[in-house]
Image: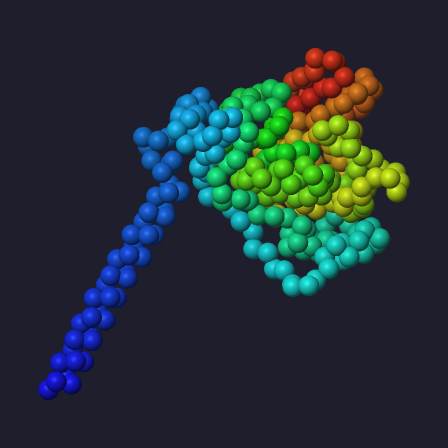
Length: 328
């Protein structure tokens, strides 16, 4: 009889513990889902960039140190599953493909980029030095208007620098819930980029001006860096991939905004792209020290590929231009 009571008592306690565990799990899942879906509630719907800016400015004034911007993320980014083999020398494998000058869609190349070179978006709070709406020189606001304030798009920024200074894509990520890809070849700049905790895939490599992967030298010019096609032992060498290879590695079907600022190789990079079969809605091209002929050739090439010039922004010193093209 006593044994039966003991068994019954243990059974009752076990059932109570199980019920408590299930209730706790339900509460955790509910709170977890709400943390990502709060922006989807009708009363929290984004009406404009200004609305979100004011709200986030108040959050930062309440919680962040001066001259910094720590804020929560507005959505949960898509991640890629990466299959990595411990001890595998992926750089040596990449150099081998460089020597072979493999095609942009070579499966070995795409696998290396996806599994070893790319890094997934950060889920940590942003960490910016400044809190503003448009970090660019005006390109972001123009593109935002051109795309009718589109939400949940995808951007690609080549020459991302530190992910904040002069960023042409940060507006879309913070205020339009866009995800994207940031490409920065300079190791020092890339380290700064990582610290910003962007909601983007990041890649410490350069974009190849050829239809195959290649090593190129990186020459530093003050705060920024410049890629050069010839080689020298006095420069840092960086791995470069065709832009099409990077897009294929991410299995991207469409890009809403492509921003190119890569030290003079923009035209060559675009020439490697199958633009007619790759859906890119808007392209912004930085054109430093462009001659009239360079600009004309670029416009002619993009027009042949179904892109029209939307606007041109000129820097104060007239040596730098930003050309924005829209797909027909």
